Image 1 (cartoon, rainbow, N blue to C red):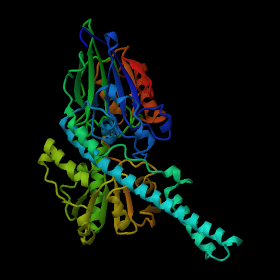
Image 2: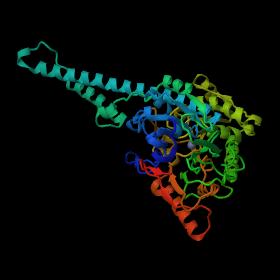
Image 3: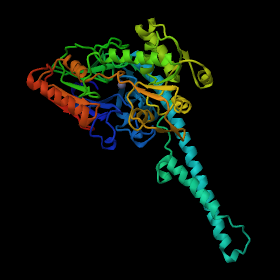
Length: 533
Ligand SMILES: [Zn+2]
């Protein structure tokens, strides 16, 4: 690349945006990925991705997650904004597919947290695959058995065979057919081929390989002359950063594009991550801003009031001697809950999340709020869970997963859902088709481990916990950058018909009324639609 100069930059959204027909029923939030093409003179283009997340709400190994929307051999590097799996969850797939270059994490915290998550993903994928394979093979065995019974009945009927074969009864055949049907209905498919197990998209060894190629994002990368990177706290979870990419053209002009990543809230009284950076005041040519809560405006005190209510109601249930189960996302939410429980008295506090127990020391290492807080809990895993069940008196169990769709919370649902002395406090976003979503929406019958359970426990939802900023926070972040009429304001990572469009309309309305410093026309990011910077 001697005597070659950078002449431009193009950005193509490959996930986490609208226009994704395959995921139209989803909210286009997950599977975040941007492909950056650095244009050099003489046609020497270089490619970098920012984030490569899992499409969630689908099986891990399903075809959407398996799909590589680029040739890994053409990539110069991968960059990760933060440790949520919808942003980092497919990084090991790169290494499984022959990638042998570096992955740069936005911070040391993001790198450490990501690998706890990725190891967990690899295990979950393998477990999911083995469970499906087991069921699939069982179905095949039952089919073979039913076929054999059918044949024996036909052969026994044949006059040529006389009575040489004993004839299996109609009931035996019926039983085998019923077994087949029950497996299909358990898998919720008409045809077993629709539930054929797909091998994990990566395994533990790919996570380890990714680890060997991992670094903190530097200001410049040797293989990308003329390009520089800056990171800014996005206030979302520990270590999460917005990333600004600058290119210096031959004529001395600098072009800048900023990727918000996921943005947190401004002005919460408690935030382990601080506010998003408010005022970089850099003139940018393009910004890619997330819109998860575009169109949502929260009260000024929603968090303070919400936490006060949460604590008050928690204390009331403790006074009644209840068993209180708090399903939480293992990363960030469960640490936040533990922080709020530090002064709670009169109840034993158990923390049952394997990855949460690995993540908490990372929070304690890097965050002064946690370093200085005296947290009060007993770590629990499946080996010592009996201790929790047999404890008499009030107890609080903080447990993963957040949406109640797997993990240790399944055991507690099994144990306590039909217990009117138990309380489930829901503290996170619940996708409607998850168990948590069904509880949130008041379903009275819930299937746990294949058994129907009648919900007799008390279900108490709390909307105050959110690591995403509302519309006001998003606009505040955008206003912190210097824009002009040519700045491209690209909105992504939201429900395109809902939150993304709502934010676009708000910006346009404010621009018309002169109520915002944001200049440039907001547009919706679309899958595979390239934006030239
Ligand atoms: Zn996130």
